[in-house]
Image (cartoon, rainbow, N blue to C red; front, side):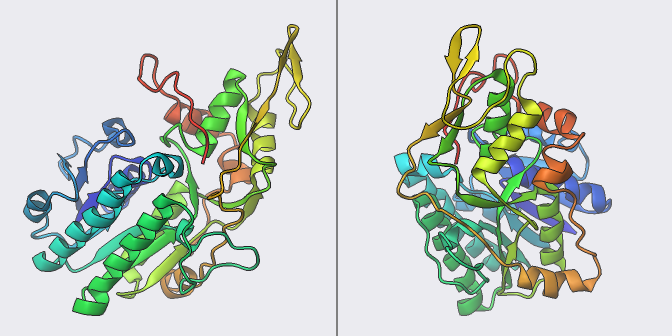
Length: 353
C-alpha cells in the first residue's frame, strides 16, 4: 500500500508515520508537510531516511504540489492543520487558509486523481461544550473558537465530496492526545516542564473543565482500523476511556514532577515559600469566553464498526494509570518534548489550551 500522509512532521502525524511503517513492512509513505512552527523533521527520526519513506516539504493548499504526489496513492491521511486555539483567537486567517481552503484543495485533488480512500483527521472540539451526556457522531456542530469553526468547516467540505460525488471519505474526531514529541505549547508538555522548572502552571479559571485524554498511539491504532475497515462517508469519534478535570491533572503532574527537597508541591490559592521567596505553583488564568467547559464524545462507530473486525481495541495507557505518570514517561515523554538547548522555543512559555 502507498499512503500520502499530510502534516506528517507534526505530533500526531509523525507518530502515525512511524506506527504505520513499523507495522506494515511492505508499505510506502510519502509525507507532505509545510514545516510550520509545529512541524519538525526530528519527529520523523528513524524513518526519514528509510527507502520506504519520502518527505516532501509543501502546502496542502498548493494544488500543483498535491496533484504531483497523488497519482498512484492508495489512500490519503490528512493531519495537516493549524491547531492551537489561542493562536486562532489572535489571527484566524491561517486557520481558514489551511484548515478550510487547503483541505478542499487536497480532497478535491485526491478525488480527481482517483485515490481510493481519504481519511480526514478532525477534532472533538467541533461539538463544542457538552453539559450532559456525550456527543455521538451525528450531534450538531457547535464550535466555540475560530480553530474549532475552521475544523468543522473542513469536515463539511470533506463530507460534501461523498454526498456530491460519492468519493469515499472518512472523518475522525478525536479527543485530547498526549505523548512524546508533543509541542511544548500544549497542556501536558507545558505543565510538566513548568513543574520540573518550578514555574507556575497556568490553569484556566478553577480548573474544573473536564477533558478526555488518549495516548497518541491509541489514536494511531484507531486510525488504522478506520482506514482499513471504516465505511465511506462515515464519521468516527475516537476517545480514551477516562475523563479528568484539569485541576486533577495538575495535581497528578505536581505529585510526579515537582522537584523534591527544594520546595513542597502544593495546589490551591495560597502561595508557596522557597528560600524566602513566595511562589504560586498554580497561576490562575482568565477563563476566555470561548473556553469549552466540558467535551465528551461517544465512540459507538469506532467500537462497533471497526473494532469488531478483530483488532481487540486494547488501550495502550491512560493519563493517570501508566501513560503520562508511569515509569516510561521520563524517558519517552519529557525527553521527547522538552526543547533542545539553544532552540528558539527553549525559553518561550505559552498559555495552555
